[in-house]
Image (tube, rainbow, N blue to C red; front, side, top):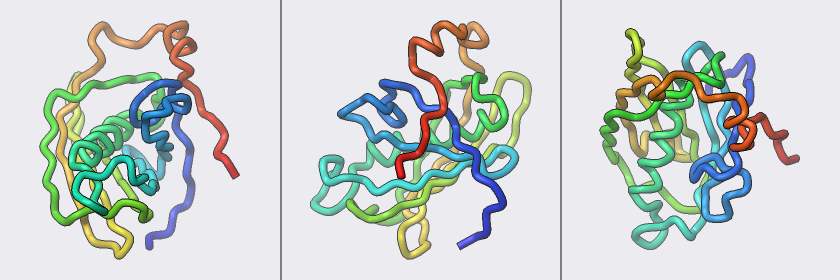
Length: 161
């Protein structure tokens, strides 16, 4: 496992499917900045999100990868939102339910209002379970209004001990 010098937690919202802290149907994931244009998340997928017995549903894998690549574009700019224009997922191995996974995302390149990012989902044994490449575009209309962010509950919530 690689050595991390710092981990800065990113904000969550209240109702997002992937990061929402009050979404009882969602994943409730937390994301951490680990370097310039780099984020990671650690997550154990509960049984309710399985596809085949014991295996995470592919749509859940795609949602986690979509979020981790989008989060990479927010490093140092937690109010700069981008939306996914294209997401290409490659499923490499069955991803197990109930086991700790590590997701990483990083910005490959940025030009103007577009960014290309890469996301990876790592299995407990250190092998690659799935990967994605995404093209993201700046949020239409520019920055989100601070009042909207407050209503969404967009803030850093403390980690549970």
